[in-house]
Amino acid sequence: MNDRYDRGMRDAMDHVHDQWRGLRPDLDVEAILVVGRITRIARIVQRQSDELLRAHGISRADFDLLAALVRRDVPSSPTQLADETLLSPPAITKRIRVLTTAGLVGRLDNPDDQRGYFVIPTAAGRSVLDAALGPQLAAERALLADLGPEARALLGDGLRALLVDLESGQRRMVTGLDQRDADV
Image (cartoon, rainbow, N blue to C red; front, top):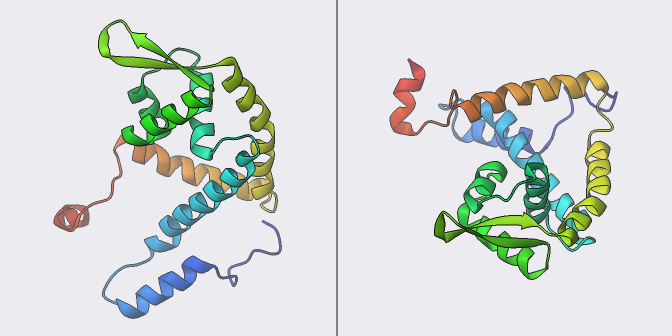
């Protein structure tokens, strides 16, 4: 890792952690340091991506939806897109409506479901994604530029392990009622 980063450096989540530790010494607040950072980083990346992608006439959510459609390379249902992008069904419906109006995606009737439909990227949608992809990836690389290769690999490995557990159902947030089961 770069010399700028050391154990003595503090960020916003250290402050939040310390506040909660002072206010509620009876609770274990250590997870805030990791989960809070993941959440905060995601929000910062979302904001910066939205700003960068605005020049291409799309938001980060639009970009993710277009990217999913292009990667899938088959007509996809809104449910499939919601599962892949982790957007809620109403958010997917809104994004599809916005992208359809902009001419970036098209809708095809689902022959097996009179109420259902499939979504496909249009040539214009593919073109917008193609134009935005390089700058977006360059911006993401720049976000990680101060982390050395070893730090990036360690961070990536740790996040992958957590994501695999979460997506497989091995780990989940527990409610207060479930806490006694988590402590066993």
